[in-house]
Length: 409
Image 1 (spheres, rainbow, N blue to C red):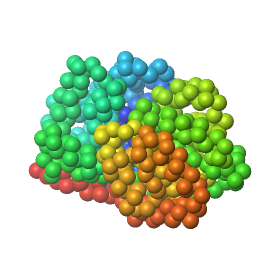
Image 2: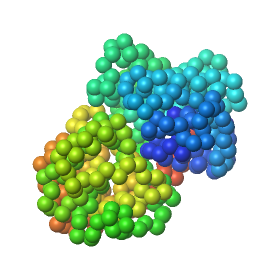
Image 3: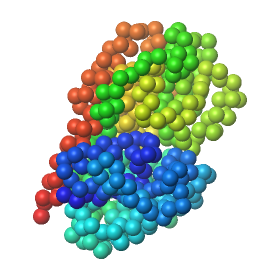
Image 4: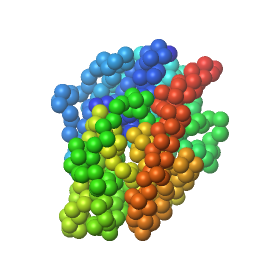
């Protein structure tokens, strides 16, 4: 089967989108499928084109046993509505033009979003190749999420985005989502249940199997008596990471240290806030590669995963949950809904009410004093990852869906 996998973000960029896509593509290629990836010139998250990719309109790479087609995108280090819009739309048009002129008669076009604008590539290609089958992956319900977070308030733009969302749902033979809540929301938009499948987030098999160094001194430059709490992921609006600064402020004298790993639009603002609060027990470590992040997670005492208190996030299952589990890191979770149910049912951590700093501080101190509980969460986390949330197993499930779609007349 010839598969075109469209993802705006891809290796060597870092992040959950890249990790999920790479695991799926590797599995498809291993199963003998002819896979081509369509993606951007790598620049995420800083908006600077990586060395080796600058000043190019398009290029093709051979990566392992699949091909990667890259196209130029508008990039900017300034992150605002206009620069993001140009970033997304430039990939949509460049991706469409490149694919149109390099068409290989694909059996399946697999499109992963967000950004939603990648759907535009599929919609335009359908006009020229009406018999090609489409599968659309939804990792975030956009524009709904952007509207609820206050990132998108232009009524005309919202209207056009909803039309784009509806059109790609209509033309897709199948829709992939990452949670039950997300599936239910798409059903309420008028789509049949049998058109939608859930493929959860997870973590990579090789990530699970890596030998981890548990060494606070090396990775955090702290002695063993310091209790290390770590957040690793995008530093954005949805996460509400101000709560970690507030918690650090309250725990100045409790031998608790906070580390924020990652990059995102809120990073500089949080750094300024931390400096004003004079938080000597909170450190920003910046972006850390996938090859090293497991050591940082394994060397910490707790992983904290917050989101803002919104109904929107009741269906969220962030991939960082599964990375923490794989690294045997107990979790404190500030998310309601499916993520909370997963943590509590698997006994891999404790959930607190999102944006409630009193509960967060109380939970940190409970786990700080209870090593036996932390050990139980650690062992349970690794076990459930191997049994249920290994990306190889998830990719196997996805490949079966793709084969079924391809065989449907």
